[in-house]
Length: 357
Image (cartoon, rainbow, N blue to C red; front, side, top):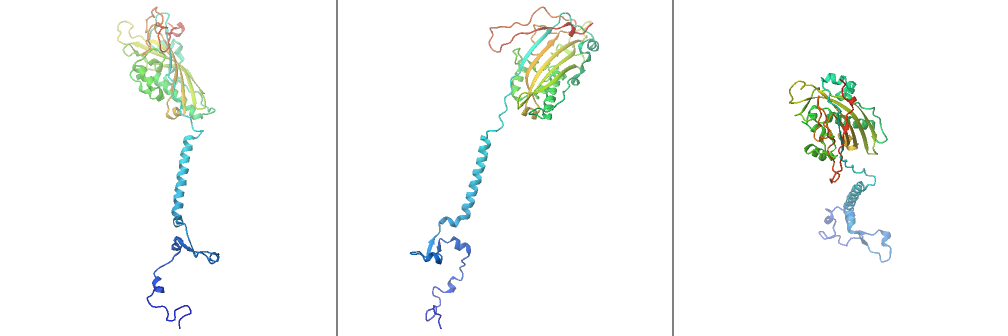
């Protein structure tokens, strides 16, 4: 007997509606969620004029993809905001200040009589340099201590860099005899290299481009070292020049024993002493400290015995044993000249600064 809901003859075989027709179709959970039409619940269908089904929004089928896209956009937005704030940050470290040009003051010291001569040992023993130390050992470092904005190690780096510069520019034989400049150049801030190179190539007594403001140099065609051991005495001091800079001031006196080159005759091999006092002002920013280099701001040099009228911008021009300074005064200064204002300066070398007989 047919069931209550079936046709009297039963379900015709092979007609639509049989179970076999839909047996291969699987309505899993993902299929149901992705359907565009969804049947209302029994409670919802009891409402007046309620439809049997409702349409789902088209985007509900791609909820996962939409969420992923939104996440990517949020990450990109956050990354872009971080970059923008990094560029526009009000507390960003300020750009490093460009190094100032070197200012040079060169003062020849003229002797009042003939230059004493003798052996280097006798000259040193009877001069104010008798108790000076030899070479780099005469450049003593003060005790390093931390400052408000710099550590003890940073202060020590500034002091050792200044000492390295003094050694290379005042004591290295190749530099003294005019054969090398690279050991000095390597210790300078890049902002000063153009001025340094011009000073080496075309020296001028203009307060900016004297080669002898950067280093001690003699003319090897005229003089030679009679003793390679230069006598040295002086001091180094340091201080902060603001939150981002350290300054080191050096004040050293160097005594060189020199002899003439290409001169023959009695006494031609006698040596004489030539004294150079150098006061150098260095500045170090944090980048300089990291890269072991310096900004040389001021070079104040007194050197003698020399004649007042000589141009010592390229090389120092020592008066040697037995020579006298001429009666000429300093080189002329033209007050009508334009450009960098300079004045010719000269001092008188005290007799006490010379070796005694």
